[in-house]
Image (cartoon, rainbow, N blue to C red; front, side, top):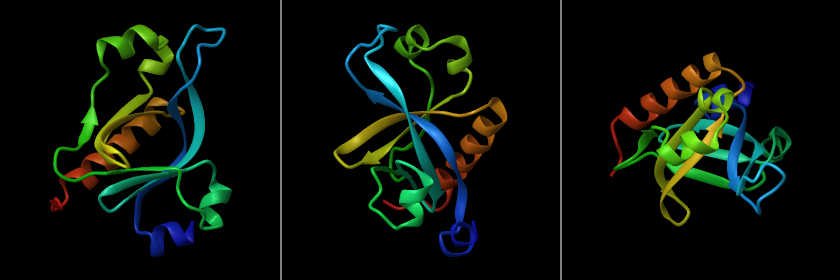
Length: 132
């Protein structure tokens, strides 16, 4: 925690679930929730498979740069149809520059309070003196 707050100057960090494409399972979904450790730092959101990978300074498995056209995205009609009600109220969609250009990712929080804190950190990171 000390490294996250002092060295990384993290706006927010914690365990979430990342919406990942997969083959249709029992639920008929073509995606699944994968557990990840997320850090909102500066103008970016970075995630690792777990906290251990972060602690061991392994390469992150993904990131979104919150510059230019970036920020929070609402749930699409497809999202609303695919998500259960309890998931929809805890899902945070973020868009920005990813590894392959403009990208949108979905994170599932543990509860609505955590969702609110995460959204606040993303808004702050996206609005702070944008980098172009």
